[in-house]
Structures are given as C-alpha cells and as structure tokens.
Image (tube, rainbow, N blue to C red; front, top):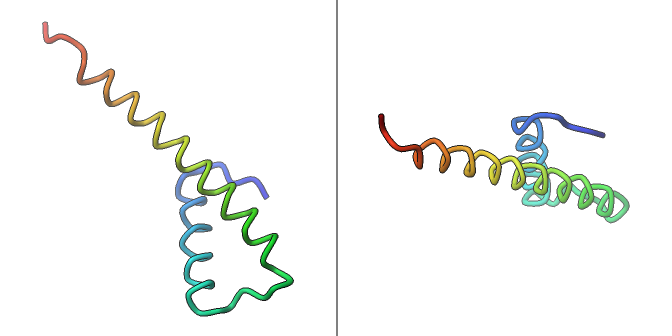
Length: 64
C-alpha cells in the first residue's frame, strides 16, 4: 500500500507501535507489519530531511 502523505505514514507508525505494545501482532502478521513500518519510517525520514534542507535554505538567505 502506497501512502503519499507524512500524516498517513505517521499513522502507520503510531498504530503499529500501539499494536506491538498491546501484543496484537501475530507471528503471521509480523513480516508484513515490519515491512509497512519500515516503508513508513523511511518515507517520514526522507520527508523530514527535505523539510530540514528547505528551512536551512530559507534561513541562510541574506537579508536585503
């Protein structure tokens, strides 16, 4: 499943962590759950890196 937004991917991360904390992930679901979690964390990390670079560029501009 492709999630296009940061919010959607954070939802996957949050719900996965909650399910793991409550021991709701079965062994049969573990690989699929881990793959979805990895994709979501990669997406969010990449998005945050891009935002950080944009913010750095904004603040690096000399004032006129």
